[in-house]
Length: 363
Image 1 (spheres, rainbow, N blue to C red):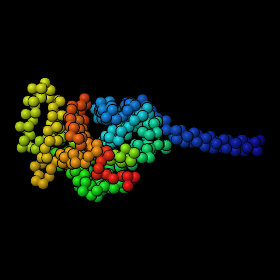
Image 2: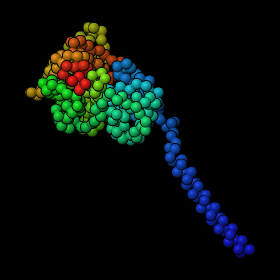
Image 3: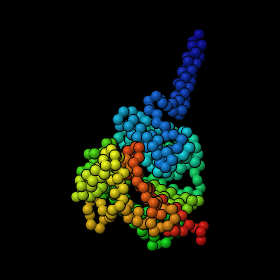
């Protein structure tokens, strides 16, 4: 009887040990599956085309909704990109900056899924979208072999100056050969634009008018790409500042200019909310900046003049406030109101089939 009890006791001990191991194994497996509670998030669809040219309003609507969910509703946003087939680098940069802002103030407030489209997912991976945000990179993605991306980078306005000519030339042109006379002018214009972020994007006297939290010390973001098949070089810069319409003109002319523009708007039947395109257009006509610093011009204005000399299909595009401006090397220019307010300023330089760039295969 005692012998049987010892055997029974041993069996109970062995069974208990097995149950503990089995339960632990089930919990580990459950943890690996990462059960996700979708009901805790507000779903935000990026749509099939997340692009500023083909789908501007819907793209800005999606980004605005993410920001509103996180800051106004105090909820968490789930960015749905599974069905997204087209993602432009410009839209990706804006979204990355917005996610970075949201996660700084509310960690864990953003989640989402990757595009199932291999090309779209590959572009996000190659341009540094996941790396900038510290997200897990997708296992599979297919990028365009002809395109070399300038990976997203961000820093505070105090560190805008280090992006001098050598850094920008390497980032924008890479191994593409360029005549020195045009190269220096192009890089100077881009360097000036980054310095303008430091001087104009976050003026202390106007920051109270910003509706959304701004990252500490003010930040800028840059990215770009080189497309050998299209003979295209693109560089873009973004900030979350007050916007060009609010910082133009220089302080001593501001009240007079605003009154004049408002009067023109009333005469033409434009409501006050749509005069941003008139202010942005006026800002692009002059080389003066609001700081009134001697020796410092408006980098965007200087670059506008430069692309007239470059030939090809060069263009400068600016999104700021409720306005979009575009200038092309053939002299074509337009500035129009946009349906959604753009928070900050996005500047895109596009050099297509430009005489200033000699591609290796042309030799």
